[in-house]
Image 1 (cartoon, helix red, strand yellow):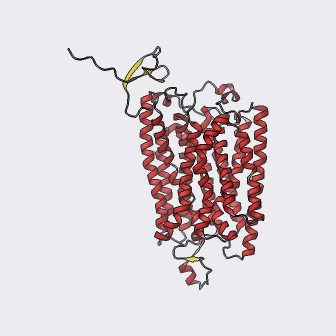
Image 2 (tube, helix red, strand yellow):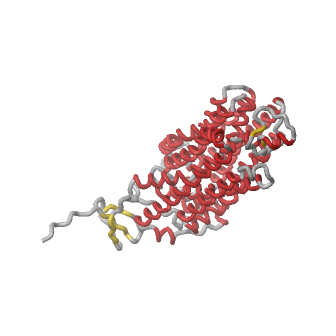
Image 3 (spheres, rainbow, N blue to C red):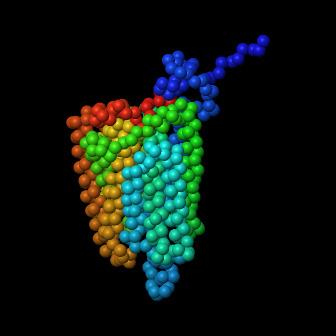
Length: 516
């Protein structure tokens, strides 16, 4: 007689609701049971979802690195190529001419950021719908490949055979547009994947970690791009950024495999495919007023912060006389703060709430920052650290608030719509800043100071509008929505949606009690 078999650690699936439970923890209710051997990487474990989070975070590391590379190389991108200086017998000021400068005007330079925002704004309108049709796995592979191709194209435009030709700038714009469209799509997929695996768990901390990884790409850009340029030149520097996007594409493949494995183990693959919901455009008009106030606050805030960050390296060189490396590091402090403190702030807001109050404080501090830049010569690191604190708290408080205001079934549409309006506003703000700075690089110190003053006044007005919007947002939340944003515990945002919406299951599936 063979020895008795040892009991195996097994899990059961209930076909009625596809929820996962441990057989040793509780009895399984009625329904058809399918017994499966527990996988090596158990999707119900904490470790599995954090592995998913890691590869999910890597997706946008490269794109954020590439987005801010022109900020560090602004002088080189706007500098005059040596051959142009020689052919026109220009007597350059120090640093005005260089071997691989591209000769972009200030307006063209700022247009690199504007087209990124505008294309992102257009594509995210369709990203949520396309992701629903293709699924997270196919969508993330599509968006990461578009991002990789766009950054590679931008790098190719800086090689000797294309630099300073008539084809260079149009190809640069195409590369930036592809980067914007791919990065916008990946952010929507990131939100969906994180919302599924961290629902009712460490959701705010997961969003904070995602922000930290994204900002890590920007921070490393400010630290290493100058070194790479001095060592290898412009073409190889932008090529290194494209290589990071290639690493993100590999992460997309791994994430797709992990997500496929986990959902299959949970038995929810068929359910998610069947419950893919068609969201009608008409439903957008039924979003609660609090959502639109939140969108306005986010748009005005980012339109006041991001254009300054894009030009901050040049601003610090012109107004404070800092060297190029020091100005790059000083400007990068904004992202250093986000990199370090985002998870901590996320856990704090999860525990104590007060998102509406935090939004008011974040927007209110912007006006004093810009006015201090305008009227004083206070050491800039103090101001960039304060700006970084404001940026980090705003991102952690306002973006997760969208998930509290709009029901889960419409989260993809809400995120896409918010991103669309934000990027349109940010693109317009970048364009205005470029026009205020002018099209002529060779300016006297007095004219440069005057133009930077106009930029700071414009950003201060933008900041004041953001502060006013956040105050209205907080008042509306307290008076009409029962302090929905300020409560630390999850609330039911579906109570503010039309009754016809509530019978639908969320796009990301119901809460998964097995994911612990």
